[in-house]
Image 1 (tube, rainbow, N blue to C red):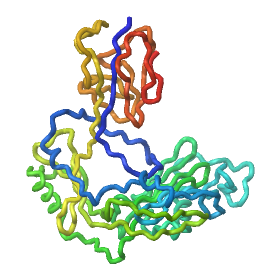
Image 2 (image 1 turned 45 degrees about the horizontal axis):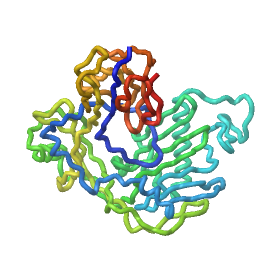
Image 3 (image 1 turned 135 degrees about the horizontal axis):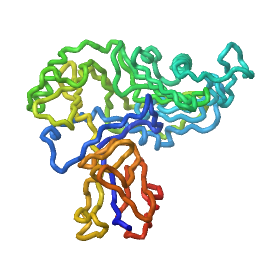
Image 4 (image 1 turned 45 degrees about the vertical axis):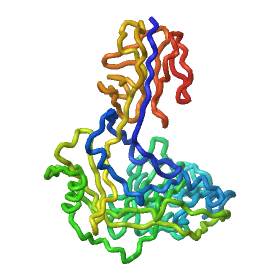
Length: 418
C-alpha cells in the first residue's frame, strides 16, 4: 500500500575549513553524532575560539585570480598551476607538471622499480602497501628537499617521527600528510599534503606556513596542571582528577595576524615559483593542549583546550564531539498508512538505518552513510520500490511529502524513490 512520505534532513554544527584540495589521509574518520537539542548545556556558553586562531580561508584566497592563478605549462621542474597564500606569499596549492617520484604510467613517467631510466617489460607494479608507502615518503622527501626554496618551507621541519601519515588506495594512488614541527614540537595548523597518482606528484598543498624565529622559546612557563586549572576556573566546574581524555602536550599554534588576506593586483605567471611581497602573515604561540573532564559534564561532551604556555591566555576551548541531527516531517499519529492529523516538522528519524548502523531514538547517526526507509522499528513496503539516499556535502534530505503517487523529485542532486 502507499504510505505517506517521510522527509529527512541533516543539520550540522561542524565547521569545515581548509584548502581547495580535500585530502583523505589514513581512512575516513566518522564522527560520533548526537542529537542537537533545543535546550543547551551550561557548558556550551564556555566554548571559545580566539579571533586570532581563525583558520585562514583558502577558498577566499583561491577565488582571487588576480594574485593566485598561473596558466601555461611548466618544464621538468615547473608547475602548470599553483595558488598563493594571501598572507605568506607562499604557494599553497601546487600542481606539478610531469614530476615522477615512483614508477607508474603517469605523464612522462619512465621510472622503474629496479635500476634503470626507461620502462621495460617485466617490471610489474609493487602491490605491498607498506613498501609503496615507504617509497612514497622517501620520494616526497627528496622532491620537497629539491623544491623547498620555491615552496617556502624547511624540509627539516617535516618528516619527524609520528608526524607522517600515508594512505595507499586500491588503485595505487597515495596521499601523504606531513605535519610541521619546530624543535620537535608540533606546529598546529601548518602542514604539507601530497597526492601521488600513477607514480607522479599531482598536487602539493602547503597550509599556513609562516616564518618562526630561530630564537622562538619552546620552554613553557606554566605546567599542564596550571593549564587545566585555568579551564576549570573558566567554566566554574571542578576537574575530575585523572580523567583527562588526551595526553597533555606542548604545541605551537599558528595564528593569523589579522582577518584580511593580502590584496594585490600582481598576477603570477611563469613556470617557477615566485614569492610575493606581503603585508600580513602568521604568528605563533607556545601553548598547552589539554583535554579536561569536569564534574557534571555530559556524555556528549569531550573538551579540548589550548592555553598560552606563558601567560595562561585561553586560545580555544571547545567540545570536540560534532553534533548532527537526523530529522524530517512525519505524521506521528498514524501507523496504518492513513495520514491523519498534521505533518510535524523537525521530527527525529528514530532507528532509521544509516550506513551500517541504526539511528537511535533521537535520530542520531554517523556522519557518512546511506539512509533507507528501513530500520529496527520501521519498514516501508509499497508499490514505489526501494528508496535510499547517500549523504553529501548538503547532508541527507528526502524532501517533503509529495503525496502518494510515488513521484519524488530530485533531492541533493539525486533521484530518489521508486
